[in-house]
Amino acid sequence: MPSTRQDAWTPDEDLLLAEVILRNIREGGTQLQAFEEVGRQLSRTPAACGFRWNSHVRKQYKAGIEHAKSQRKEGKKLGDPQGKKVSRNVGEIEREERKEEGGKPIDFHSIISYLGQLYELAENSASNANGQKQLLARIEELEVENGRLLAELDRIKEDYHSLMEILERARTMAFSKDGSQQMQQKAKFQVDKFGNLERIE
Image 1 (cartoon, rainbow, N blue to C red):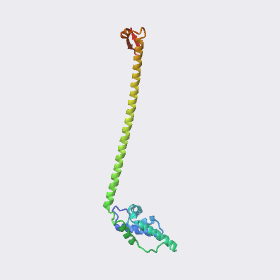
Image 2 (cartoon, rainbow, N blue to C red):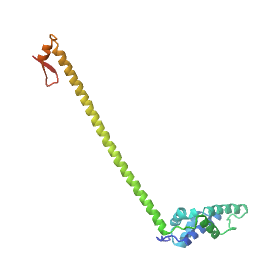
Image 3 (tube, rainbow, N blue to C red):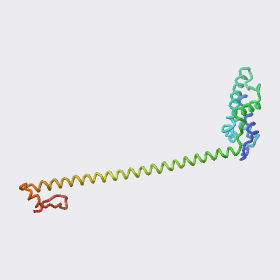
Image 4 (cartoon, rainbow, N blue to C red):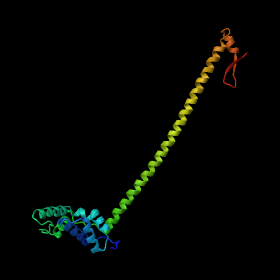
């Protein structure tokens, strides 16, 4: 089993990977076969070759892929199912692709920078998640406090209504005998332990 190297991919290795994959496309092979072939040549795993192709190299060879597919179709029409007769080599396609892409290769430092950006994004996402949890907890606390205040308000309203009833009964009892102002001034009341209002003569 090929050993996996930890060093960065070189432009030559990227070119080899592209050449083998495009050849497999033209000849009707599979990408897995291409990854295995490149892996044997570069002492890398097929998975590493597949990751490199899908994450970076394939983007630079969009036109080359379409051209290889069309050559495969032409080969089948002309009775050459393997599509081996080609008019352009991979080097020409590679030069065109690099010209279209601005010719800026991805180096090891660019990969490290990209991974750093992903890590920072993940940290920000985690921070936002923690902030959201704190906000939800605060909302729950406020809901509990709001419920407590509403219950307290209801209790105060009940006490107020009870007090108004007591005052109304006191006023009625004060004028119950002769309705005189003098009786109102002399009448005294007290509330027993059960909350009932009684007149003291």
